[in-house]
Image (cartoon, rainbow, N blue to C red; front, side, top):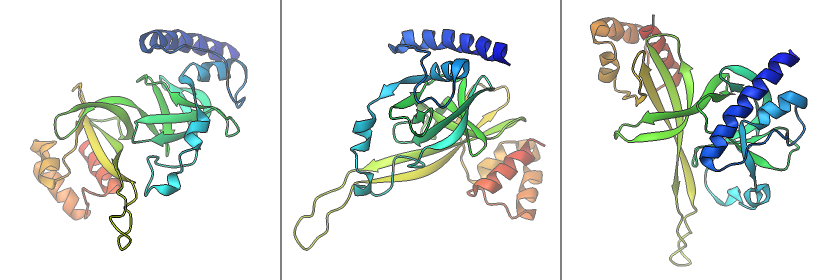
Length: 247
């Protein structure tokens, strides 16, 4: 076990060093927070960016805003993966506005770090792998950000993206009108990748577009959705539809 961890730590350190040279960051194998120890802590640390200024993050009073840029304001435990290898437990929260996963190696740790934007790195989000991807939205824009894999292992892979829109508030025009607070609004988007196709596209959730995913089985898909009363705008139902397409 110790040999495997040391080998993996060495591999990740080499990769992290190359990424750091590209991004201008300094790679380190020093653990911050003390949740993990020894080689495991070192391996985790190489997958994280530099320590951010935690105090400046705390000075932002999110209560003054409606909504939140985070999918959860609290740091939640998760497993950190590198090339599907379990690197250990960390605590994370996802800033969907900035497309950044903030990480602590323990809840008592003062410094906040960002997960490295390496496509080999993933965390588990509600048991599903979440990782940095390149994808194309409905307006044909090529974007980079974090997607959570909902269905994989067949003809189609289904992903979920949480997108946050920020709207700046406005002061009250007079004493009879309330000020409008700044707010964050969260949206869910779904993306799909066909086996053998090197691109991930935003999924058009209209029924007619779902049928086109496998045109040869259109009538079969239509009948299955009707029989099971499946709603393409419901995540659980959409997962079931894609699993049926993969059957």
